[in-house]
Length: 145
Image 1 (cartoon, helix red, strand yellow):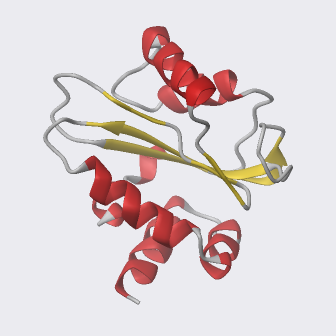
Image 2: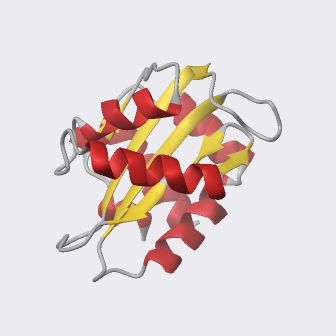
């Protein structure tokens, strides 16, 4: 379940950035992979080949990190929206950065995320959260429903 991988120090509220690269660098500041520009470049290269924007204001950038003990998920919420490219021309409001461990089931985590974040009500609920704990509780509640 996605909620098992969320930690309040890796949830960024009122997030702002004007490019995907700046977004990733800011998100990595709270990661175990701090200042890993090679990782950012790997994600950007992947974005060029296969964009991870789902539309509806959601982007799910991801990559696999060698020798990582556990998958790390960093969630950024931007109520005002970020001017990142999207096929539906909507500004990005939710970025979920996945740094997958080879030990975890990446496909399962991604499928769960797609199911959750495709729901308009969940996205609305997340945008109304005022604390990181609320974000985690909201996602865990939606995973059970």
